[in-house]
Image (cartoon, rainbow, N blue to C red):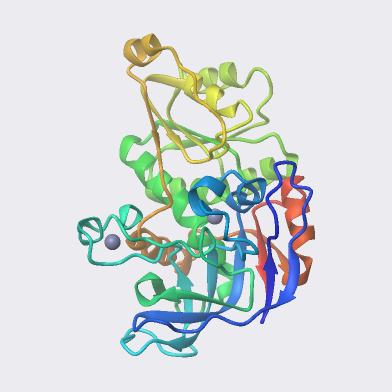
Length: 347
Ligand SMILES: [Zn+2]
Ligand SMILES: [Zn+2]
């Protein structure tokens, strides 16, 4: 099969993936499923993998390369293990990014992301920037009949990550409250739509890119800011003292330390993007009772909920499509933000 493989890490990202012919994955266990990839979303995590940020976690012994990334996958079931009952070859599916065990206590609680034996195709195991990839039955959700894999693939990770953060925010936001969303890219534009559907809050979308600002306006954000040097003051003015919740989809480049300054007393910052370092005086936490916490991808059931919102036309993925052989162009366009929404690779 055709696959895009990474041969070296490079902090400066001056490396290209090689498009090669490699053996397709085969079923090794009774619960495994080979999926023919219909589309795979390109994620900032993929850039971080190339940069070597994940090396110590996913490639401890240095034996992983050459490696196939791609963890936002949807497609059609190609082959199934002997115990698989819920899907059959030909079924269109979206793949929760984590292969969970279903047996550990965290799995029983439904906390998929805390699974003690979870495996993450595209992050340590070969993923979906290829014609086929291997996962397990537990990770699959059948698509509604009118939904094509291409239209939803990035929902598998970008989508649920945004949905989980928006759902947590919605629980903190009364109607009339303000939620600021920093970064209106592949995740932020989904979060805006989710907030509008599941919360009565007012949204403030913040992004430096004119294309992203336009997308936020098109999606109905109540306020759209360009993230200039006065952005904290602008948010305080709009909100009458600070946002009730701030969701940080950037998490680096200094944005992480702008976000908490936008909060009002008792407000909460939800960190989704990563790479930077938050520095905050402890007095600030105490005097203003602000809370800061991370949000990690999303549970299987959250992907089910998001797919229901999608099937009803309430939350849609905006994407630009690239062929697998053009993946290096897609990565370059992503780095330089030449598209809005998500980049999607189609083998
Ligand atoms: Zn991702
Ligand atoms: Zn488990």
